[in-house]
Amino acid sequence: MREIEANTVIEKVKDLCIDANCEVPECLLSALRVAREREDSPSGKAVLGIILRNAEIAREERVPICQDTGIAVVFVEMGEDVRVKGGNLKKVINEGVRRGYKEGYLRNSMCDPFTRENTGDNTPAVIHFDLVPGDKLKLIVVPKGGGAENMSGVTRLRPSDGVEGFKDFVVTRVRESSGNACPPIIVGVGIGGTFEQTALLAKKALLRPVGKPSTHPELAKIEKELLKDINDLGIGPMGLGGRTTALAVHIETFPCHIASLLVAININCHAHRHKEAIL
Amino acid sequence: MIRAIMLSTPLSDQDVEKLRMGDRVLFDGVVYTARDAAHRRLVDLIKEGKELPFDLSGQVIYYVGPSPARPGHVIGSAGPTSSYRMDPSSPYLIAKGLKGMVGKGPRSQGVVDAMMKYKCVYFATVGGAGALLAKAIKKSEVIAYEDLGPEAIRRLEVEDFPAIVAQDVYGGNLYVEGVKRYAR
Ligand code: SF4
Image 1 (cartoon, chains in turn brown, yellow):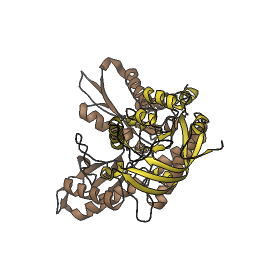
Image 2 (image 1 turned 180 degrees about the vertical axis):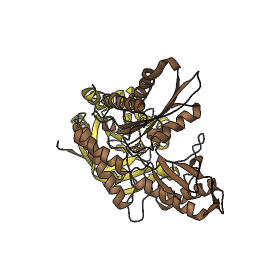
Image 3 (image 1 turned 120 degrees about the horizontal axis):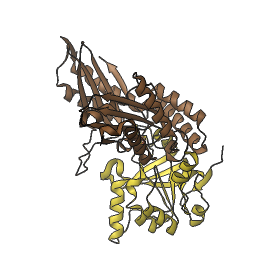
Image 4 (image 1 turned 90 degrees about the horizontal axis):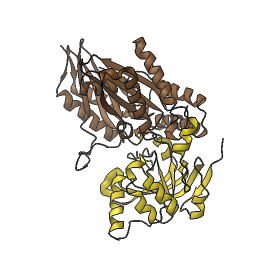
């Protein structure tokens, strides 16, 4: 059994929190550049220009892309032949988040749901564990802002509603989110499974490189159609009107109960932040 | 490229009457920050007839909860938060003389009615552009509700702070008109 020191994990999580908040992925930047070229709306073009310039400043000055540095969502893929020595993995990850948000001058946005009292260090992180073959530990840190997360949703359709019912739900949800989710957005969609699983699928769908189609040809076709329908809404960058409302739609599916058709949409803003590392 | 209108705060009725949806502006001068919790406290004071921590007349409020400043920086990342959460409070502030609000996302009919009645403009700026917007902030000082952390009220001095008129005093609404123009 391979062993990794707890401290190594803490330091890595800390770095991932800071890096994720100051640097957006290259695939997002290229999608934004293409969108700026194609955008017809003058305010839309101006907004896309500001977003691209902002990304440069954030990277150069190590300042967060966005002041909402999010809930720290952490996906963990734990090899079956590796263990963390010197600390419980959940605690270790939370310690990394605590240090990352403090040392990276990131904003603490976690609070009690009722008293609204801030937890003071952006913990607890929302951690999703997965057990995989091998002796590696993969960590993906996804700082998730409130504005876009608030515009997400889960619904249960009738199985007979089919593809049309499903597309309708997604487009309606995006229309209702208007400028609040900081468009251009990335749309993660989960279909199938159980109630909690469909939401998780939607969140995981966001992690795919921006605009990389589903490996399933039929789903890839639906993703393309949905992207067109969403951009035809005219919402545009920051909701001020334009041709760029979403940069990509990613769909993930899982088999479901014969009586159900659960669908979830998880929206991410253009501050599409995630960073991963393999230990 | 359309030229931006320079706006020096505080704003007068004439200043805001000139503005139409879609206009690009650059702010110079003082703007105040306030988010959900600060709004609730301000509205409570107004309802009780008590004095506010700053005089609202002619002022501009920016909906922002900045990230902490790195040493040597004036402020951390400082982009707008969603404005709809302030919708129930804003009419009280507008009636007290507030002339401008800066945030992201559309406002409710209640806010629009107050904006038209008392002459107040709603500006959108770019959510998620906090690093760039912070560069336009030259000074930052907490003036009230320090206990609210990022939600405290700050007095900011800004230079060339960019925004777009999203909803004007005539009922013009870029979230509706702009979207209609590009929908297919
Ligand atoms: S929705 Fe995203 S870009 Fe917009 S304010 Fe929230 S975290 Fe920042």
